[in-house]
Image 1 (cartoon, rainbow, N blue to C red):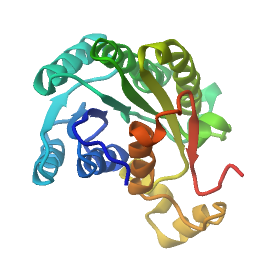
Image 2 (image 1 turned 90 degrees about the vertical axis):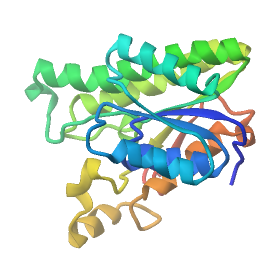
Image 3 (image 1 turned 90 degrees about the horizontal axis):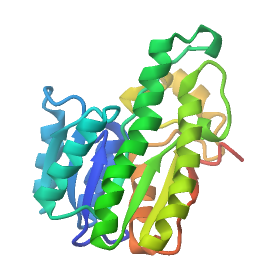
Length: 252
């Protein structure tokens, strides 16, 4: 596994699912990891921090609504102060609403999804990117989606927000490359998390969803985490502006 010894990482949406898997694998790879989430009162975020500590690295939990600039600025400042800087940012926070055709989408649904997924990713890149530039460099990994590359019926603004993340990634990669900051994105397929449990909870539903994946199965959170650790590491030192599908060949 790619090494992250001595790196200081911030993972948003780190309470569960893909974010949790990324945070823990980065700690296994040698990083100190701060995890942020909008929910802090169910014990899950603190549990991730404990697991990071058990792996022998510093863990830090912070509450933030990434759609709010003030929250993101405060989060970034707390993490930078606690760790003495930020070397890695993973933008894992996101929301969606299934069964939402665009013509039926209400303004509040559009605002919640786009503000969290796209605006939130931008705000986090902006704040953490400034810290990285001041510190001499870093790596940003944004979470897009296979539906950011290819449309799918009934997902409304979710796919649009994820497509926006791809262009945001490319724009930032161009702007920040001379400053030593790499910016890449992952485009996962269907991942077995609570986020989309209804797709895979029943064996027959999972088999039906997996039938369209050339590798024959849905992704586990750890599949996405391994790709995130790679992009954050020096193993990917010559990669920026890339969008890496992690979908078992679905797009093919």
